[in-house]
Image (cartoon, rainbow, N blue to C red; front, side):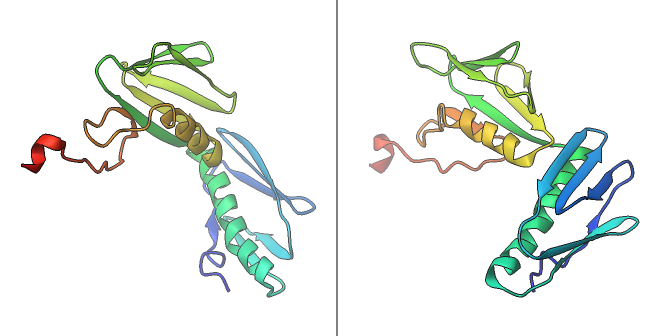
Length: 179
C-alpha cells in the first residue's frame, strides 16, 4: 500500500470536491480544475476530507494510488491558495518587460526574446530583474518557469543568467584561481 496514497486530503473552507464517473472536479475561489481517474482506484469524499483507496493490488494500480492522491492534493491547493515560482535575472543589462500577454527578455543576445504567456498563468514583474509566475495548475506554472529559465540558463563562473529564487548555484573558480 502506498504511504502517500493512504494519507487523507483535507478540504479547506470554500473548496468543493465532486466525483462524477471517475472524474474529480475541484472548485474554489481561484478557479476550477478537473482530473480523470484511471485504473481501479476508489475515491470517497467525506465532510472535510478526501480519501483514496486502491481496490486491486496490481503494480499499475499501486502506482496510480499515490499519483492521484498527489494530483488531487495539488488541485485542492491550487484552487484555494495557488502556486507561484520566482525567477531572478542576473547579469549586466539583463532585464524583463511585460507587454500585454508577452514577456520581453533582454538576455545579452543581439535580439530581444519574446515569451508568449498562456491564459492559465499570470506573470508579474518586481523591478526589471524579478519575474513572478503564478497560477492554479502546479504543472503549468513549473513548465512556464522552466521554459523561461532555459532561455538563458545560469553559467557557473559569474552566475549570469536566469535562476530560481531559492536555487543554489555551484560556482567555479576561473583560471586565475588555480595558482
